[in-house]
Length: 167
Image (cartoon, rainbow, N blue to C red; front, top):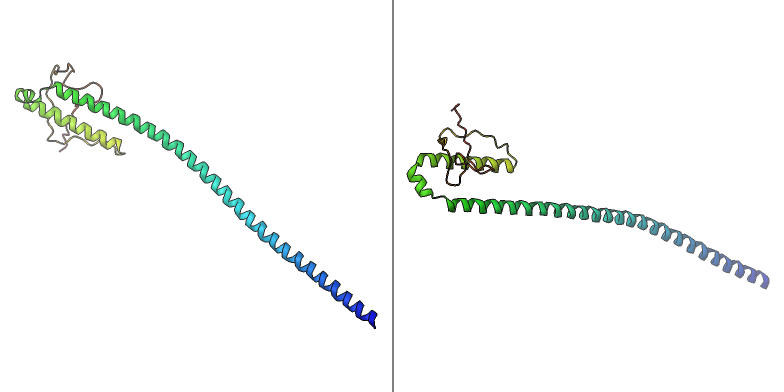
């Protein structure tokens, strides 16, 4: 009978070892499955992060180019403003107004209307609104103080007026 008890004890020990091995195998496989799922999620997250970094780098390059363009435009605008200030210093507007006020008014209104059109065009508008009917066209002049014909600047600051006769 002792053999029987030893045999039962041996079977119980082998059963416990077998059950322990199966439990270890099952939990290990479950852990491996969880780790595999987490790894897949992490790979997707890393891929998304890499794409975001690449997108940000491309955006930074674009922003740098746009910033350089804006800087150049700012320098051009400042140079244009300096040019206008120099022209205004050279002109004696009071004497010109006393001499021919109507002509000066027409030229100034035309130049102002042109600036507003350019501003509208630069900000996305059509910039093709007709001049108001009250705007006086400048009378013809041969040259102004700066030597430009008709009191206009040849590049962009001249006042070409158009009258709208439909009103």
